[in-house]
Length: 98
Image (cartoon, rainbow, N blue to C red; front, side, top):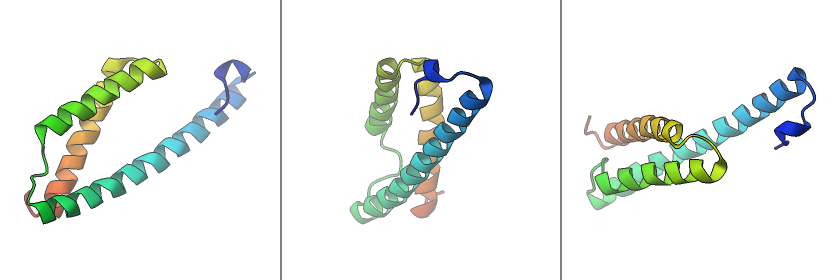
């Protein structure tokens, strides 16, 4: 990743945004595959898709990571809440518990 201060014009900045977006997309794809695996493991254990303590932990981690990474923890929480709810729906579908 390039330092934003090293980007001299909007063309360079936009190119870096595109590179960053591509990396984020790859990470989200990886996370989705992890969620599929989680559903398989939960099915074997008889666990539910939603485990509130884990939801709280993931949201707390997102807020803490945002603090560390220098962006708004409220934004991180909103994004991760959506991501977590999507993940739970995906697991529920896989578990046949829609």
